[in-house]
Length: 583
Image (cartoon, rainbow, N blue to C red):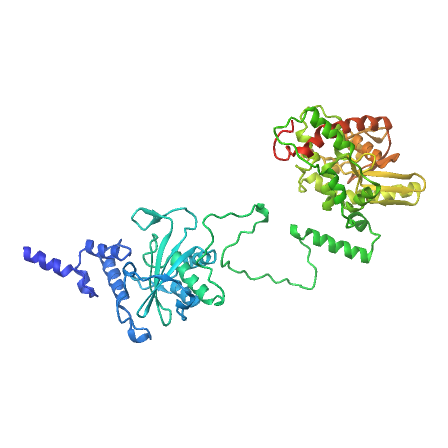
């Protein structure tokens, strides 16, 4: 009985080289699984499947024809851990026959040892190219033995600070990998990595090393190699906004460009944000050459002007730290001194007005108004009751803005030119020849801390010179008929509307912020009247509002106090901008 067991054990012992299929069928399942596990192959399945898997694996290991290649294997490969004469790799050590297509084929044309089916390692190949291009391979060493080139290196982990080594549970800062190449033609004979998927030599880390060798060989031989100085472990990128960063993948698949059906014909469509300025410049240049008198050109055009002399007026010579009490007498004195020394000359005022035409589409206009109390917020400043000015400062200094996608904003900008055109027609019918011009941001040298951006400046022989302020009320969509779909008189019946109806005509409410806006515009422009226009899809209303000197003087005092007590302290500290309370 014992002799039979010994004979069976002797029969099941795997041969050194290759066993036939009948011999493998005599192996026990446990022995088949041990052999598969030793060779990093799948060990699950029925015995028949395991037998075929082992047989194909053995056939694959021994299936080599020395006569099919000029490089004879002559002698067995030497285990890497037994090699001691390592040196730093030089580009001349890399076999000339190694090419990128060979590495691609190494990943794309592997065979399953069990079924013989062709396997594709596309994902590992793509990741390998990314690791190569981003410099994850480092410390490449070379050993020259007989007809083989042994190359080993380290590969930085792509995400973690430390990595698990195989199935041992140990960790390391790098993956260790090696490849064996034919010296003459660069054949890839063997590859290993100590990552969990590197036993078969088909992981992304091995591919990264192979692609790095190809890249180094193909680089300029007159310059030093850069693979031995990869990107640093601790990256120190420069600060950047997320919207300015482009995230791309290596070897991104190229998509076929869509062919325009009619390439010679303009096709309307939304433009990208980065194209806005170029697009606007092209439109304005075309209008200037074709028809400079058109309303669109007169509205959007603006002169290229340097407004830095104006902006520099609001740069303090020093800043106050956060621990400084801004109510201290020294601070208050400095703020008052800064206010008293604000001097805007006529030349600066004219350059500013011309250089900010186009208003919201002009970056100069956006920059300049951040240092001023503009007419649109004068009502809020005048009626302010809260002692904490932070939220109002955010609005004045441009820290928060209303998004352009808000329906009421889009609606107002869309129909403002329509309202101006109807106003011109109405005024012309009543007074004869009428001229309406667009203007930029005006700062009166008398009031260097205030600014006014009007919709239009109107001139006629009968009325003289005045202003036009247009409102296109949008209304709430929750109501059956929003303001935009009513006549102006019908809108006035709503208590939330800015105007009252008096004898069939609209009158702006005294409590409305628009009242202080138009008075501020008249005060800055030093004019006597403004036509306040309410336009809806169902009609237009024009109210002539005269300058009220007593209201202006009362506004001026409060505006000055707020500017000295709140705006200037923010200029000296930028606390609100940094999310800190001003006081």
